[in-house]
Length: 415
Image 1 (cartoon, rainbow, N blue to C red):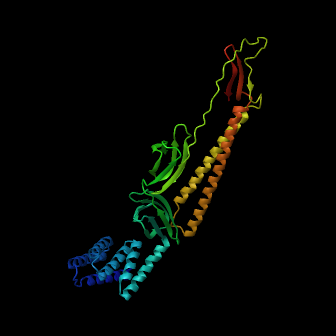
Image 2: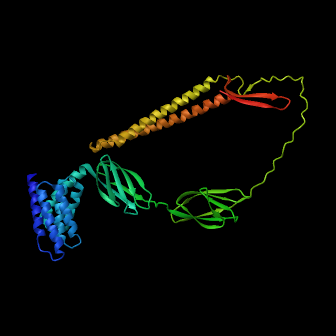
Image 3: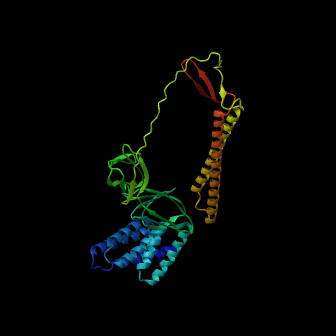
């Protein structure tokens, strides 16, 4: 560490010396950059690496665009060493790469390549490359993990620590997207997302066999036929066309942004039907010689088996649904285990745990679906049995009713 620190200090001193050369173009900016670099070097010597970084980055902003590649090269080196000391390895890697690209000093580049290799080795051990692109680009990418949030702008390509992340992609005028990203060792995590415009619209061209028919889109009146172009929201839209004397025409169409969907509505005339009115007949006096037991009850299933069977079926179905719920809760437990996986474990262990948890969760969910299906069928079957077939109080009872005023059958349902 002593040798490494001496190398840093030598490089920083060299940077200060190079910045002290006279500059013809924008001399004031270069002089300010030289002063900031000297201050940053002093902070670095005092192990105040954050302050050193701030001075170096301020100096870089001053001379960017002035065509002073020599000064920029030195500042990239200083920034790389500062971020390395701060443990910001991704930034250190980027600054070292820029220094190697800009510098003409082969001897010094060889030394920095050694630093770059050390940084890259550490990154490859506990980080992986992430590539996120959006169409259109320029979206804000919010990356969330247990440590907080990180913000990037698409397209993004860089390193992220191994683990599970929740992403929110935002851009003004577009629908917000939420995605899950699992960063695994040795594999590049890629996401290519197409953003949908907020309140994007398309058009419906409605051709109708009958003029003057009312047009409704998603239940909202939009005019009458003929209608060449109706502007509607993007997505699945329900269109109804109605004119008095005709059957309602209804269809569903998928509308895409700035696209035209053509509908040919053929209205069919409503078929009129006449309903005969039944006339009452003279019934006269009932035959008193016929005796009718007004308490007679004709169950749908006769005496039939007892209603206990139906209640057993209903109870069994409820128990099965309860078992299904238990299996679902158990499956969610394995999902939580996947979310809380320790990414510091060896990758082989992580992959094995992930596969085991995933298989267990899927097995539990499949079992719960079976329980739900059988339980629902048992409840429906038991209820049907109680309504129509049980003979001891359950079922449908039909009672003949005859009086001076009416004749008919009274129906009642019992449990």
